[in-house]
Image 1 (tube, helix red, strand yellow):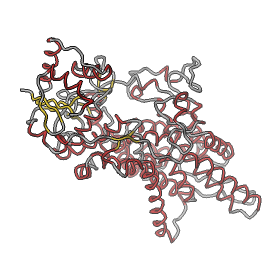
Image 2 (tube, one colour):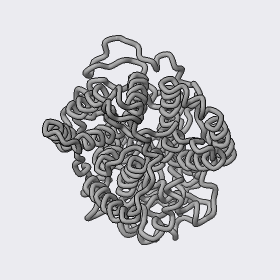
Image 3 (cartoon, helix red, strand yellow):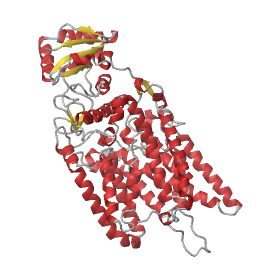
Image 4 (tube, helix red, strand yellow):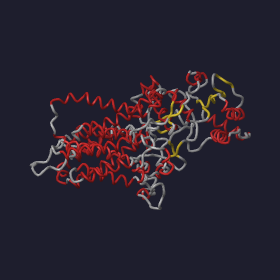
Length: 602
């Protein structure tokens, strides 16, 4: 199926319909477009810097105030990529966290498609600076990728492509994930995948097209598999909808589309066979994520402004939900997009296909229980009929299906602006006035969604004991450094950053990751929390020193031996006094080195 531009209906005087954009011969001055492309890229980078403004001045000392744990986790992943390259180790598994069991990195959000290429940058500048560069590049790169596809294949107006690209890269749901989850921001391959699917075999070059699409799919596997599944589902719905709307064209293209699809499956299958086998059959794997399987989307959020937009307010999270804001487009833009779909329904197959995709994925995103305006009316959603342990689907979060709706909104915004721009070219004064008003409405709907700088908080650097390399004297090869608190889903974010800062040169027990529980379901952290972590968490919550019995002392010391611990390290500061007293009773007297208390283990 060829991608058609959105066009107004031809007047009776027109003898032939307008040609598709894909058949337009590039003008002689095409080379002069590059300054415009560079300007667009610069604007997108500027928006990315605006989003990360609170990090720019001090990337070494800032962390997300909304998702500090995830922010630190992705810094740790950057160090994982650097460590894997530096030591030529298997990047699909890591013993540098959760020692001695390890972590299945393919079963986690390891983002190897970014962390491995950025390994030289991480080794040169450190994980925290590289994280900032990654986040800015992810926002701008996604926006520019969408812009490039739109102006190349979909619309004639570069202004329309610019707006559509800006929304794809800086949509409220995308920016919400930019608080600490760059895997949901790094969507730069998705527009290329979608356009390659829709043009698969269009000029009978099914072998070339299939190989290119297979390579793109393979790369996206190492960026974000969840969004790849969402994109693949959206493409399936789009292809079926187009075939139903244009059966004759679909029949003509069926053979080459099928051949291209087969080549894609073979290419991606061969390249991804071992990584996916390792993900689902290697050590530390799990079958599903039941907790995330319950997160559905509230339909009212489509009319709600997200917290991190120009007019957003955090107070809405109290009623509309806190976990994620994937579909918080605001009522002005949702109204404009719906109106554009209705007005252009008969004129554009692309609009009809996009609307069908949005409807299907909007319904599926409701989750297992329908929530409306923050309340549950007792209506079961579509995911109530999907088992938690169903392969692949059991690992999805329903609300994230609205990423397909984000793509539809970006497309409709571009198509609507493009159509209005061509109406403006007509000679009638009423037509020009209507076009200007329509453009003003689109702009007015987008302006409130301009992102604000994301909230950040101070992120203390690791102790000098860590940053200076003094720790090396205490941790021989084959032994671990035990930071207190141990990294876990409740605390220890700071100590996980120690590992990231040191680029994984010392392994640590437990950690912040996804792994299997005793039933094989995915949970955050270790299947069984250690006694040391339980005591530290208890001391932190109650602000006292728990009573230490000989049994507890023996249990903690056995845990340290099981971890091959060589030294226990605690930052030396007054607020950690209870922890120090507790560890003195559990292990023995401490000593101070630089800015830490430590306990050497025989």
